[in-house]
Length: 313
Image (cartoon, rainbow, N blue to C red):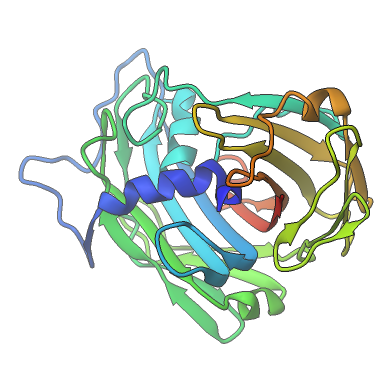
């Protein structure tokens, strides 16, 4: 299903990872990356938690029901390589961070500057850290993350990545708070970071047509593309991605929305998308996103996304 967007494409690319419980560093490997005197380096983290409402069809097997996925990387890196850390954790690159609310921009996919896994080439060496055992908990529920070696196709990068996934993951959201805890390692102290769960999001109407089973017969080309959703929540950011993976074409729009229950995609922008086809419908993904801090790392590296996707036939 196209609405899983580039984050899934990258996670599929990482399916070639070598799985193991606790991969050892190769002989001669140092834990710390040598630092150039003229290049300051930072400890960076990217922890990405995503809940996809309904049935997620990846095209690689039976659809997954209400899937909760978690991925994380912890790195010693050049400050300019923050997007590399995010991409290694599976997060799709966000466009213009200053995009005004209720406005849209084009997202263009291009291979320039990317390696075979779709990750931007780092400016400097990136050392990913093994910070011990990592788990996600919500109330009495626990989800241990597995640790895996990052494949050699990731340029100038070595180390490990954490991930986990579970179907029927809605019970994790019901606790109201998700906590990520690590036992510590590679110079990183043990930590526990919590993030509040915003209200789940669900697309209810496209135009005047109700969404049923993740699919809707959308408006004709001459009409405005109007989106409505329930469960308004002003505590988190809201983003819409709409596009079509037509053969030979890949075009997406990203819109940052006021969380007020309704948005109309400007016709000039929707007209610029590849035309809908019977076997290539438009995909619309609505994502409610919130972030939180993690002790020992800069910024707000803990990201929680609640997503709902619809095929517009």
